[in-house]
Length: 399
Image (cartoon, rainbow, N blue to C red):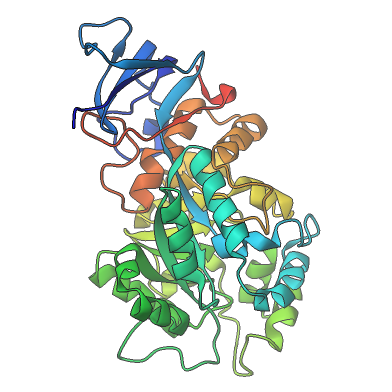
C-alpha cells in the first residue's frame, strides 16, 4: 500500500527535539520553536518539521490546517486513579483530607463501572495525553479493566499496583505483588510488562510491603511509586500518632500494635529506603524547603496534582522551593474522586495562573519530565521517526 502523508499546519510548533528531563534552572531555558509550522506525518510517524512553505514538503501530501494554535508533544499524565472514575462528584471536597477520605471509603466496595472507566480514558486521550500512570487499589478487576479501557483508545498505560493495609498476610517469598494484582497478572500475563508493585502511602501500608515493592522495582528496572506528604493529617499521624486520620484508620486499617514512627513523612520514607532514582513520589504538598532539597539529592521524582490538592483543601505545593531544588517534577490529575476532569494540561494552567510558573517549565513538566518519571524512553518529543503524538497547548502556556 502507498504511504499516507499528512502535513499538519499550526501557528507554532514545539518539538522538544533533543531535550532530556529538566531540573532546576534548566526548566526555564527557552524552548526552540517553529513559527508558521508544518509537521509532516508519514504513516503515523514524524518525518519532518519546518516553517511553511519548505523544501521538505512532500508532493501529493494532504494538508490539514489546525489554525492559530501551538502544538507540543503529547502529554504524560503521571498519576491517576482510573478505577475510581465512577465516583465523580460523589466525594466531599474542600473540608480537608480526612473528610474526603471518610466519604470515599464506604464507596470502595462498589464494583468498577466499565462505562465510567472507558469515558475517563477517552477523555484523557482526547485531551492530548499519550500515556498515563494508573494507580489501582484493592479492586480485583482494577489493572485488567484499566488496561483494556486504555488500549481501546490508544492510550499507553503504566499500572502501579498498590499495596494497602497492615493486617493481611502481605509479603511472602513468592511474589511482591499485591494479591489482587497477582490475580490480574495470572489471568493476563501481558499486563506484567506494563505494571509494577507500589505502595499506597506511609500511613496506610505495611513498611515490609513498601520495602519489598521498592526492592522488586529496583531489581527489575521498574518505577516504584507512593503517595508522600499529601496532607497535614498524614504528618500529624506519623509524627504524633494522633489526629483525625489516625482515628479514621484505627478500626479499619491499622493493627493494634501500630505505633507512630515519630518522623515527618519525608524522613520516614528515607528511613525505609524508599527514595532514590527510579522512585516516584506523589503530591508532596507538605514538603518544606529542606525536604525539597533532600528529595532532589536522592534523585526521587515528584508528581504534582495541584488542582486535586486544592479541591481537598491541602493547599498548593511549595513550588518555588521545588523548582529551585532540582527535583524532577511532573504532573498528574489524581482522579475523578478529587478532580473535575483528567486533562493534565489544566494542572499546568492552574500552576501558571495561581503561582506564575513560567510556560517553559510547565511544558517540560507535561512532556519530557513526565516521560522520564515513568521511565518512558523517547516519549515527550516530536523527532524524526517518533510517533506523531501531539497536543494543543492552552493559550496561557504558549509564547
